[in-house]
Image (cartoon, rainbow, N blue to C red; front, side):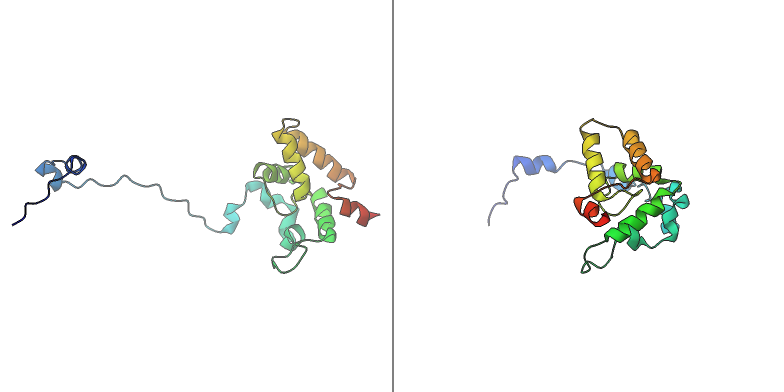
Length: 159
């Protein structure tokens, strides 16, 4: 007959004595926080979005084709159309603020393209500018009718 193997020190310390009363009472787990439940997709949008001019327009104007096989995702004509709508939008400032704070990479937001927002973010991260200054500068150009140049390609096409 073989002797039972003795428990190592680590195994002995992991097996602790429990009082019999502790077996009679089951501790309830701590209540977990319920995740928020949304009534509909519209409730996910910020309040300012309800006043946006883009609500009545096709998303393709602002985000291009949803089909990954179609290139480019949005055309220069779509960008110009989006900018025209954004120039008269009452919530353009809030839209650009949201895009900058959330570092939106896709689409046209308050008439700004990804490249324009990237340049704004570089200035913000370098401490050269503030969010409010960038917003005011961009919206002033947008509403004054000055063409906002995002790429060299756009300049060539506009001429």
